[in-house]
Amino acid sequence: MPTYEYICRKCGHEFEAFQGIKDAPLKRCPKCKGAVRRKIGTGAGLLFKGSGFYITDYRSEGYKSKAKAERESSSSSATKSTAAPAAKPAASKS
Ligand SMILES: [Zn+2]
Image (cartoon, rainbow, N blue to C red; front, side, top):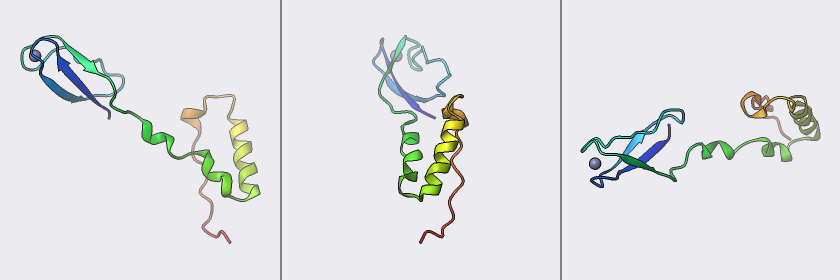
């Protein structure tokens, strides 16, 4: 859940609010009921970019081709929501 920072245009009161991305932004200062504006910059969702297909680069050729096949088979649809992580390889990597 991203945190949004707001600042009141009227009294200058700054506060944070936890909101879903789809939630409408707050409009009223909790102190003076004045109009607020949202401060941009609080990161949301960046954590998801750290891991992905690149981890397969040092796996075996068979694993890579399998991942490649899966990637191609699902390329017609949106890969973001449907691409489940490939089955975890067995720990026996010798
Ligand atoms: Zn205010």
